[in-house]
Each structure stands twice: as C-alpha cells, then as structure tokens.
Length: 111
Image 1: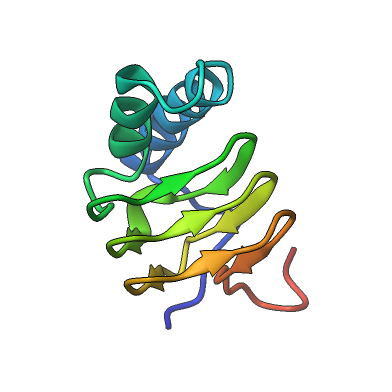
Image 2: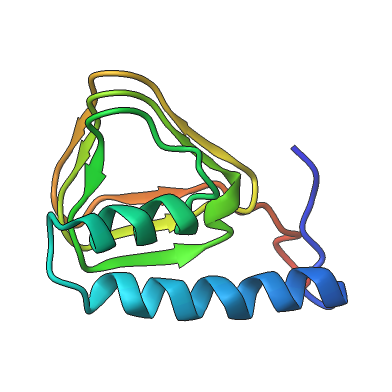
C-alpha cells in the first residue's frame, strides 16, 4: 500500500473529491430504495457495486471510487469508508450500523 501525502493532491484528485462530495450529499438526501438512490450509489462507487447490494444512508468517507462491493452485500447506516488505500467487500457480506472501514495510509508524523 502506498503512502498518502496529505500535503499534495493533484487537480484531478481534487475535482474527483468535489464531485464525490456532491454525489454523496444527493445520495444521503434521496428517498431510499428507489431507482434514483441505486443510480447515485452506483455513480458514487464508480460502478463497483454488485447485484442486490446496497448501503443505507447516511454514508460518509472518501475515495469511494477505490471501493469494490460484491453481490448480495448490505451495509447498514452510518458507515464511514475512508478508501484511499482501497476497500474490497466480497459477496454475501452484512456490515452493522456505525461500522468504520479505514484504509488510508499516511506518515504518522506528517499530518
């Protein structure tokens, strides 16, 4: 896993972060279990979500495009997913409310 330099962010990463923040806001304020809700979740995860999988809002975190969610996955509300280092959730997984998935990796002294 490569280290994340918190002092350096590319223009592309910044633009992607802003876009994801906007999609995340819409997702968290959309009626659950609708086509719009599913489409926003798919957009947020950059298409990396399997069949019959869902996340219950509210959802929070960063770098969602680095997450991969398998089939038949249920993630309950208030999940925090800091995915800068990548997160893979395989098929048939259920995660409880308030779970935190953290794969960020940065120097412990340079914050």
